[in-house]
Image 1 (cartoon, rainbow, N blue to C red):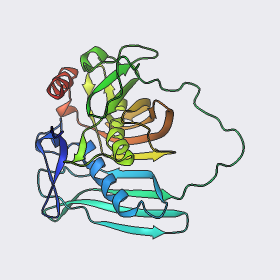
Image 2 (tube, helix red, strand yellow):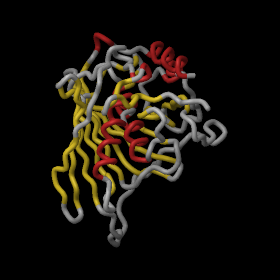
Image 3 (tube, rainbow, N blue to C red):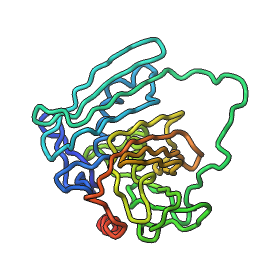
Length: 277
């Protein structure tokens, strides 16, 4: 039986990053999706009970997480009849490297009336290009408006057009299947890449992520389409829409800081994709 790659192994009552967790910014640093997935997992396991479901996840990535033994203490901040709030931290060598908070709600009936909706819905790649698979897949990318070209070659999207990705991510914990919430938390971190990716590559690194969900994703593949990017003086904010083959179901926002000294070129992104194939 083949064991698919994962970001962390469970070790000594905590976790230890695997080589797969290395960031493109630095091989000594744990990549963002690994942290967002781990934090989401701990919040869901500890607090998505009694009919509560997570609808908002905010992750603060204020310090580089390293390849060290990691613990994730969590605390329930509020426990009401309809609203629950919980926090969790990534702790290494007594230092907090990242933290997250979640809002969980009890589902209820929809109120009456019609609301405004996005006129243009994000479109996933065709089933011929991306047939459904229960196994992790190399991310696909698309750029522009109405382009049929989806592939895993970043240099073919070396432009300043709107970006989108379609992903079926690897596991967070070795040997453990992804839940829908953890899956979308991993993929949503691609909001940073989709909103900060230009014709010269990526020069912003995100410092946080806020994910909002109206429902859980359906299936194993999730899309992220850039909605906006604003930046001045080396500071940026970007927002993206999350979608699956059933339509849009949430959004994600990141704030980012310039990392121009370590700008990731499109050719470097190609190299990363080749290693995943």
